[in-house]
Image (cartoon, rainbow, N blue to C red; front, side, top):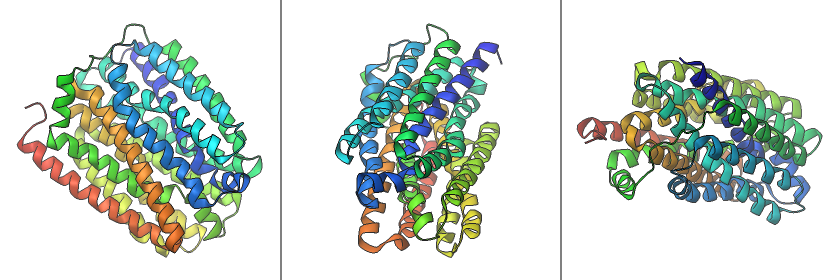
Length: 388
């Protein structure tokens, strides 16, 4: 691996780390946020749903608009945008104004994550492409180890505004690193109308994208409400909440590292089936976790499969149709955000109607649908390859 490629991979990984910290900061600070802004947990969780809808709609539109822009400049500007709006979000006086600013902030994530994957896909040799894409998505896993637990701790001790400010500083630092590490002149092939038509009319590719939406919906039905669940149902202290989040994130890194190392050998579709199955196990066992220790054990399979699933999905799409990678990665990001919105909304509705008890079963149903559709897509892909 060339020194330039290695430096770019590390910078883009850190960029995804900053983006992941920002995307998850609402879930991490939800306890203090709803108390400070005087809204219910279900209403506070809709900040994630609102951001998810914005990102889902904007991802393919922005991917089409930025096709010919130099990626060094584009990715740096996306991180600076993310930083500036999170700094402003930290100063918002109420829920409505925060929701608007948060919706604008996440447009940086909409641009950065898919375009970082497309960029490294262009820079990496063909035989290293799947591994390279999976590698930069380790940043999301690392954000769950450090970012979400630290956000939760900052929220509990100093208030949610400090956590948002920390995201702003982190994203600004990532922008500087990306600017230094990436070379000029990296421009993935601009997507034509014919490329988009090819993507939208390919049933198997669209099914793979839908797997991401279903998986995210299942996970965010529960994930959005982790901190209030731990506090109100398990009686966990702020320190225990932070430890549970860190435990989840650390195992998430392990799962993502394993995927990054072995996805090219195992096959991306088989990897997705394995990681989704792990998530389903945790959700089926969730009602049995009556304390902090039991919850740590129940979380293990889910954590191993959580971010690993999306890494494998990104690699799966990049390998299925390399010439369509920018479009597919953008749509996959859009699907992930659709799933976040669906999951947060599902969980919020269930909380309002029947409390925390039903969340895990609804989440499990989403994951079961994702697993079934993933298997169908793989059979269809084998019968009619994406490049056909």
